[in-house]
Length: 64
Image (cartoon, rainbow, N blue to C red; front, side, top):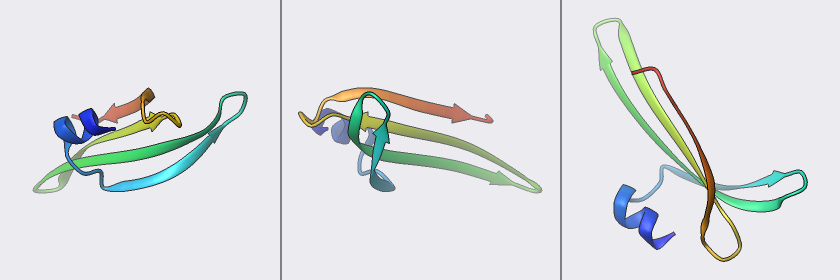
């Protein structure tokens, strides 16, 4: 978690997620958007941490 904070800064949101067969994870979300006349481009990142505060995976998507 400390490395993610150092690289990406504070997340916009924090929560929990349960993944069947894998258990409960802390989840941080990051969001970035750029708006121009009539158009919005967005990026999202979800980072999943285990009980040892280590990254176990991530999901990202973008329309940039």
